[in-house]
Image 1 (cartoon, one colour):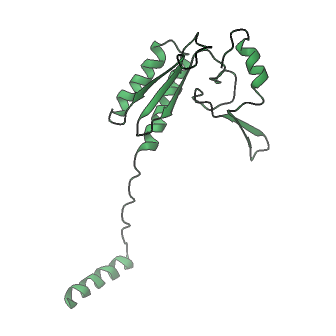
Image 2 (image 1 turned 90 degrees about the vertical axis):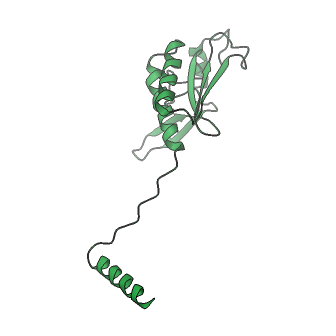
Image 3 (image 1 turned 30 degrees about the horizontal axis):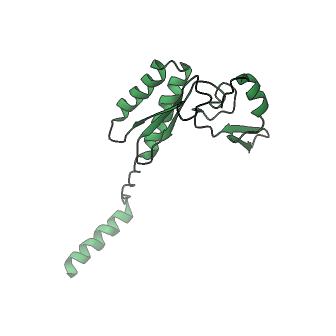
Length: 162
């Protein structure tokens, strides 16, 4: 949401206390904490440097519907054409995690996005890939001591009664 006739600093000053992406939470330590749900905000920190709707060029990593990650990016100079100003690249779940991370890092670096966002984009992609994995089943608990002896004795008795 960049306006041609308004600077991004002015837009931030107007919208920083109230916008659609702002999430305010009470902290247990007495202070209020503010987060952002902006899809172009990789760290979910409510600040001027991380606000994707303010910056002309921004990058975000979101989960894909059927596994994998999707990298969304804003292009500079398309303030009046929102559909043309957004590019999406999908990395499916069939691709290895290492190749996905390398592709995300290269996409943010080679398209001249901010260099400090490269690590954050790879970290977000990693967290999304980990969250999409099926959880492992807990192993069956092994009996120890007297409980193991009782279980072995009952198994032995059942074998003889059959």
